[in-house]
Image 1 (cartoon, rainbow, N blue to C red):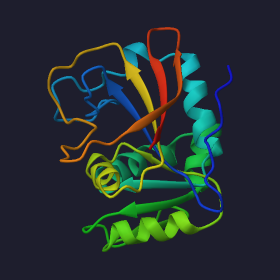
Image 2: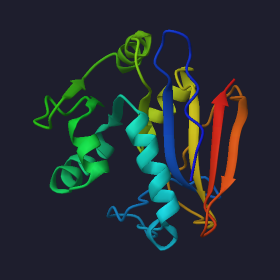
Image 3: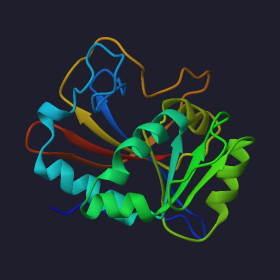
Image 4: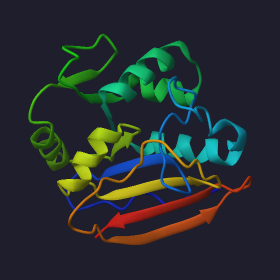
Length: 197
């Protein structure tokens, strides 16, 4: 299965937010994280095609940008895993936005403790492949509000969860999007790729 490559902005890294999201916009605890009533809602609908999409997306990225909670989840899981996805995540450049994590022993990981938006803006000025942000709701809200997100890659699941943390922040100014691709996958998940206008 083929998916279009991320659009590049001339001379800059493209910042892509990629998320599993329910039809009603919930992104909380897709993989079984504790503390949420519907935790693990992705697994029953995860297919080989979706796995291929996530692998390709990860392989095309140069930098993984994470908030603290998602970083702790990833750091607790990926170093113990094998395979192409695990190898990419474990070896690629990672940037963690956190005021409480001082440093990380995960290979190729840098922690940013202050002026996260400034650090991300600087990172985007570098030449290179995409910056990928997964999970990291608080960070994503800040990046969207600050206008630092270039693309949204949503994997929309055919389920209404009815409660939980939402992907999108409440903003006074609407955020306009341009649809780049919409593609249904077996099992009912739809890939939606948007450029932030």
